[in-house]
Image 1 (cartoon, rainbow, N blue to C red):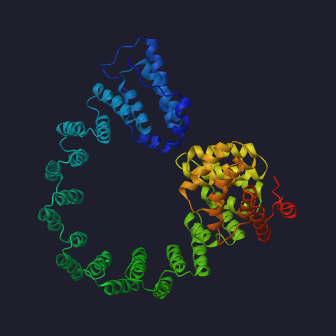
Image 2: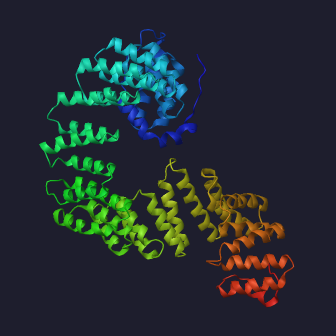
Image 3: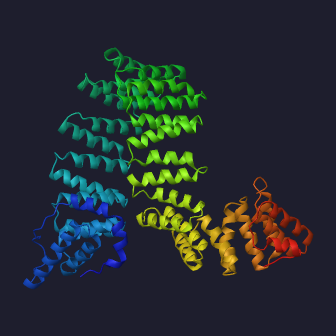
Length: 586
């Protein structure tokens, strides 16, 4: 039996759990064919019974979402019978989700060998070949499938796309022409042919395709408008306007016409006419509110691009509130416009109305947090606690809430919140997960659990080796402990290289060098830290500067910096003694 890569339950269980929704989709779309292929090896009764037992258990585990268990059971089935097409197909699906594309294709090609008429196997294999850049092989499969079923629309479309990916645009068009003969003129086919002709720089042929579908559907204003939009994209403004005028003559209140005319006025250099077109539509009771919201967003964008005060749009919002008094999307949009105008108080009211109407939508709560941060920690706590009532799985609110509690110096409470949020995280967010571990590390250090803190910093850096906040804090705390100073210097050095004007990072690096006894180098970095923190001088940085000056035989200058640190309200336990004795105190 052929030797294959073996993934145990322990190896893949965590990953399979993360991609369970994808595998479930594969399960729902899989067409099981349970009959044994006539070319299979004959089993004795005992082996057949074992195979059936494992196979049905595998299907049952898969149906229940126990994907790691199902994967292992299918491997048992393969060990018993490496020629079973169903098992080969199932294993292919798992390897495909595990991003082992070549292995997946290998299994599926064997399934096709055993069951060459299986449509599902062939389509999946052709798709895999496309991903593996085996374009000719994919084309070959689609062509064979069409020979067997010349009426299959999906295969025609897939073959056309395969030709397109292979750079054979003419063949792609020929395939779509053949499909069109079978099913008639269809929008999807026409638009694909337009795209392909455009790629071949055959503009006349491209536009003929759209005109053909218009002739077939003369009452469909959407196709006439589409032709105008495509002319506009091609900078054929006169031809575009001609199509728009056709639509306007038939239905002046046709909703999509407004956006097309706005695009036309913008391209033709008439922004004021574009704005007037939108304003007229916004007060037109014939238009649906969704269209008005789209137009209003475009109107605000136009005002910004033309450097016009957005406050002229506010009366339009009032008109729309009168027309549609209970539309939360309108509140949300108005809140964002008010934020542009720096009217935070009124913006907060609009976002609150949105959140009240759609409490399970995180957007409203997030915008309120944007306004509350960083000035009002109590407000941040209130917003996040309310948000979590309706969005208990939204980890971002745990992060905001934990951060607020941290700044309020409620360390144990903050730690609990971050740990709860971390449990909700999946492996698809390594950078955010790293930040959670970072906060948990900082809080444990504040709570005196130093080794636990360092363990969490390691977890954070494993997920994101460039997490500068972790690199800085980890190295600084190690220096305070006089522990692993070489490691602390390496980590802190990364932060300074990435952000050479960051006073905090410069201070940490200077302090680590100080701890290593490299006083001259430490002085260079601490002086830069002082320089880049002049706007917001730091008592800690100035005390460190004094310590380093003392070690470089400049005691008078050291005393001067210690006194400055004292004036800034330093809470250092040794600063008073340094000033009194005029000496460095460890």
